[in-house]
Every structure is written in C-alpha cells, then in structure tokens.
Length: 555
Image (cartoon, rainbow, N blue to C red):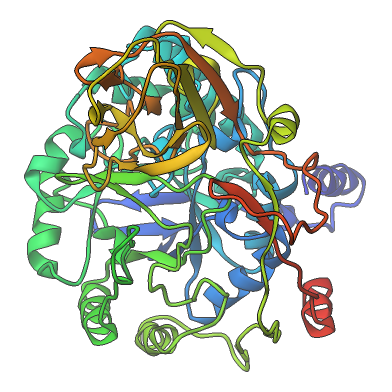
C-alpha cells in the first residue's frame, strides 16, 4: 500500500483534481483510559477471543479451525509461542512447516481475526518445562529461570529479539492483525518476583513493538498475584473461571489498573487432565452465565482454550501439587471445539451469548469434521528395545560414568535413558533397591528380565530385588514431562540421585539414551513369532479414507 499511496501523491502533483483524502488514515490500537475501553482506529472496541495454539493443531487444519472461531462470533485468536520448539538447540531457530507462526498469523488475518500474541519466554501452557527449552539446564545447571540471571537473560533476549522481529510487520500498527503482545506469563505466581527481569522483558519487546500493539500481562485475579505480576508501563489483566465472582475478580484488576478496559485473559472453558484422572469437565451453563456477566460489563474476554488440540510427541508437561502429575497427550480440555475439531454443544451455547453483544457472521454453516471407520487396529510386535541391534539403530553412543547422569547431562531432551551396572559384591537376598530421585517412571530389569516399576507420580522409589554378584541391574527411565508451573520448573530427568542396593551406592554405570525423535531406522516388518517380556516396539496400520483425504486437500 505504501508504493500505491506514493503513486497517488506524485500523480496529484500533475493532476490537482486527485484529492489528498485517498491516503489512508494510519491503523491504531490503543487504550482509552478515560472511557475504560479499547480504541481500534479511533473507534470503541472490545474483543472476544479464543486460545488456539498452532503447535497443537496440524497445519492442514489451521484455517478450518480459525474459521470456526470466527463463526462463533469471536473477533480474535490468542496463541502462545513455544520457545523450546522454535529454538530446539542454542542458536538454531525453526519457523517453518508446522511451526510457521507467520503463516498462522496471516491465516488469522484472512479469516477476519485479530491476534493476541503470547511469546513468553515462559508460557506454562501445560507444556514440557512451560515452553522453556530444556537445553537451558545444560548451559548452566544452576540457572535461575525466569529471573535476571545473566545466562538465562542472554538466551531469552536473543529469542525474543528474533521472534518479535520476525512478526514485526504483522503488528496491527504495521498493517497486521496483532493487537496485543503479552509480557511473560502469570509471573505473579512465580516465587522469584524479580521486577528487574520483567522490566527488562518489557523493554526488549517494546523496542520492537513500539506503539504498533498494546503490551499486557496476565495474572490470577487476586492482589497476591498482581503484586509481582504487574509491570510498570504494561497493562495488567486477570484470569479466572466460572467459580469466581465476576465483580470480585475485576476489582482485583482495578486495584492495579484503576482505569482502562476490564479483561479476563484466560476464561477457562474447560480444564486440563493428568494421567490417571477422570476427564475434567466444566459445566456449560456456568460458562454461559459467567460469560454473559462479563460481556454485560463491557469486558474483553479470551477463552482458554477455545480449541485445545494435541500435545504431539513428548511435549506434554506436568504439575506438582503434593505429588508429580504428568499431563495427557490429549489436550481436548473439554473445549468448545473438541480435540477432533468438532463444534460441541458448549460451542453453540457460547455463540448464542456472544450474538447478544457482537455481530455474528451470516449463513456460516459449521459441521463436524468427517470421520473414518478404522475398525480394530491390531498391534504386532516388531522388536524389543533392549535388543542389541535396536540399541545400535536407535540408541545414542553409550557413556560410562561412576554415577548416574541425567538426561540433560547426556544432552537428551525426551524419550528414554537406560542405566546399566554389574553388581560387584554379594548382598542379602532380597535386598532393597532404592532411587529416591527417580524422574519419572522406570522399568527395573535384572539381566533383561523386568522385575517391577518405580514411579515418581505414584511415589514408588524402592523395591526388593533378589540378586547375586555379577547380576546386571538395568533401569530404563521415561521422561513423562517436565514440570510447567510453579517453583520446580528446573526439572531434571532420569536418575537425579544415586541408586542404592542394600544401603550401598551402586557405581560404574553404562548409560544409553533413546531420544526416539527419529525411528526411521527401526524395521517395520512383523515379527509375530517373537516373544519377549520387556519394553518393545509394536506396529499397527490403517487406511486413511478418501473422505478424510479430500477434506484435508480442501483446506
């Protein structure tokens, strides 16, 4: 548009009949403190947004699901940006394919949605280590995350500069759809309370954003959260669900923002589920009632989440509330749009409420995504993990260490690590085998034969073993997800303490990592006649129906 406007201006020098009014007024998004509202291009505005994280949805479905948000009456989409995926190793940035953030933002704009960008560096999001890259724990094992720690800030600043520069042209004031950029995430819930850190993040982002978008924070709706979450010069918002009184929640925001729009930046449309729990649900009637109360007060609202999606690979996180609680691969979240991409009854109930306050799109038909009938998918054995041939194909080069090393110490983020040692002395039969620091779940084997399970979440850290001198003791440890919330996010994996047998420390370990990020070298031929007891690979096949293929091609 810039070239076109200059053309009109130059043309008018020779043809005075062309009016100067052909030049567009600058785009702007700002806070009108006097009238407690936003202004979009000078006009009163409020958003109703839904969280949809591009990294939880296959790229082929981005446009379809964004379109479903818009059809529900939402006028904005909110997304986290996950540092760990975009910088998988120090200095190596990845923003292509399934991680093409710029394309996702472009699609949102095409679907008439504004964007609320939440770049972190910490995001929580029920993701491994809250979206922080685990390699931070290797560059400095005692790193103080989410503070002005010199090492942490060196990497965080580089990431933020790279990310924000890459989306600078997509900020609203620069012609794009990004109206809001969040600084950190729920920092008031973190023990550090380092105002120098949050102020520095503000300055890094502000240097690139300028006045092209509004900077904001998100914290729990209580003064105890906002005390450390509020950043000078950044607009403070709150988050809460159906169990909170609306006026009480917004009163907490008013304590730190006496004027400006009321905002619930995370209105919980569902809830997360941990392994072993029943699927969590949030009542639709309660959501409708609370939503209506907020919109009646002219508040802006962001649903967390409107569409959850899936924690692909090993990227689900964990909580620690009295015990370690790993989260599911599924991130359905009981959201208005299901994990499969289908609108639910909750979706249509929310749409009806939004329609009382904002215009809805005309004649937009929203239907469930097509489903295929896959019948029963049989799993056939391929090979045991501890097979020597499989070790060579999928395992890293074995390391020898006097004492166990963590995943991070051997340069591994996810997957499994096998610890093996040969018992060099005689012990009573049975003897207590103990690993106080097991992170997170381990199969204990003797000479390749499974003997039991140790589990951090179940608080099982010891078991009796019948062994003799020369027995090979093996511990295969699975990383079930690093803690993503609270003070324990420095969550090292593997054997984080020594292992003892009969009270004696075991030494001289052979350590083999199995990252499992690439299993292309694994033979996929069936081995139905092979029997084994330990951890193994299985395979199943199914055919993708033509209706699914045509649906993907269409979108």
